[in-house]
Amino acid sequence: MAILSTHTLDSVSGNSATNVRVQLFRLLGDCEKELVFDTRTNQEGRLSETFESAGSEVENYELVFHSGDYLEQHNRQAANPVMDSVVIRLNVRDFERRYHIPLLIAPHNYTVWWSGTPEA
Image (cartoon, rainbow, N blue to C red; front, side, top):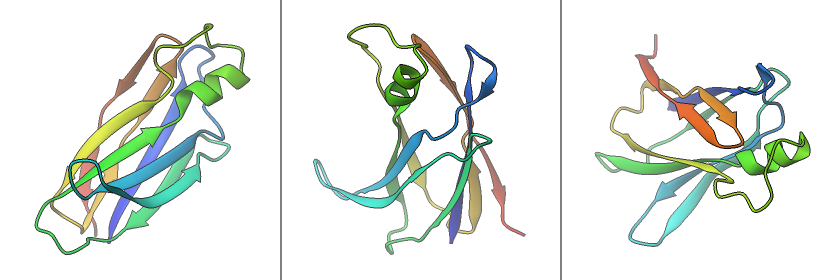
């Protein structure tokens, strides 16, 4: 099983972004997708979830951080936000890996990167 983890930070306050809704979808076709998990970041802005292969050599996923909801709750969202979620597409080939995707969020920007390590 692969592990997907994140540490989500509020770059305005410098604190962990707690209770941010995060969803992972397996992309099945042009417009079809399957929910893999739907969870929220913990009090440290972190989450760690496992997921399995559906049997394909390469699988495509969509990771969605609902950042607009979080920013609005913390009075950091402008009226009529243009960016209310962060969507990241992942191509997963190795299901014996940990994929760590840290995210910095703010009302008008975000920064994301990833690091992957083989499981021990």
